[in-house]
Image (tube, rainbow, N blue to C red):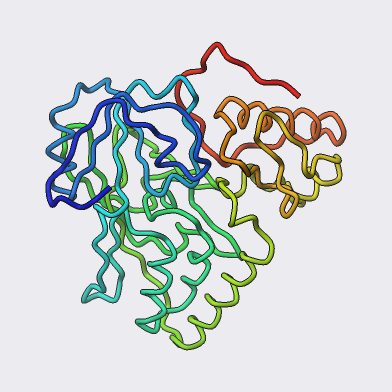
Length: 303
């Protein structure tokens, strides 16, 4: 969407345009803010029971074919302030792409942010799910966060206010706040080394993941002591298809939409099929990393 410099509200926004799977229904309402202040003002206009969906790059999200009966808020390209603070922390708003934060840290001779180059989403999503890869996790480096509540009020919080786990983050005392920004503290390092590490990680991603096809990154969390991709491949599911959706032949923990024709229902049914087969063969319950929201339709798909 072009930057008009003004916030935009649209009805019946097709979410397939905004999620990396290129599938799914429409959001009843879509809001495109251009600043944190505009987002805060918009929140004050909503009913307190309005369903909200925060969307960054749409890289970890599936909206069912029946659509999302609520308001989708789009942060990428809008909440994009990124700066080095006087205290040495990096301030990053929720719409900043995680790889951009990794490069920014490297360019300021800060270390250990390189893993964020492998996180295909925004800072807001990384905060919401404690995103990580290659040994790094987002919340290990969070100094504090800026939240907005449903009244549009700003709330500063630290990690002590949250229950933080593997691919899970939740407030201990309330549920009506959303991530607007965060301050990250990374150790001092060598920018050249960090940039080389980022280059290596990106080359590894290209070599091992189906980045040329519509996908949503890793579909399942790795179970303790194992890897979801190994279990899926061992179950004979690599390449399995359903209604245009396919378990990637390159990386079994990815589901792709190779022809761009898969419905959200087909993708969700393939996810469920993978879970059922792995549970039946190995007794392991694979837990989704991807978020699925919205209403089902009456249409179905089958093998």
